[in-house]
Length: 198
Image (cartoon, rainbow, N blue to C red):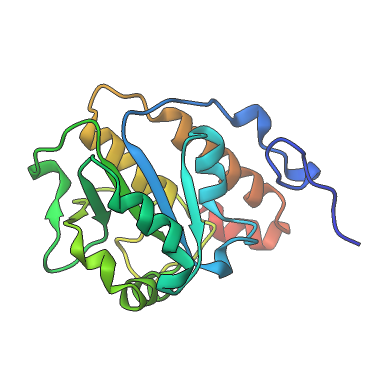
């Protein structure tokens, strides 16, 4: 029998995060291409991101056909569009002059899944790519990552928004993530919890 979910945040009632959600409005348009394996993941940060920034668009899929409606939307978009993905050709967002009215595309999944999304969708490489110069480690300590520069999609979005709009308070995003992380850690058995609290 499945656990009942909160009708507002859609997390299990025992892990409801509504009290930690502070909705915010941003000028930047956030679009997430999400690997199907992330949709039902309990630690999925995109669900949290969309609660804090309700205008966030999430498209689930793998192949170009899965993103047909997104591609049609982007083809008709008049704002500059950027892919947030570190590569040899990507530019540091801090050294790039960006307008407030831009579209940011994020690939949501493990590094392997995000890379696969990029390979399966060569049309994405038609957009200029941006990366973050990371000085601090990810606070998303409840998921293991294979790379030291790994960030959750929510963290990447918060840092990109702060880079584009320096006066913007991104604490609603970071506070919501911290609340989820702490809640998950507290629900772990004591011996497991010690590994995350150290």
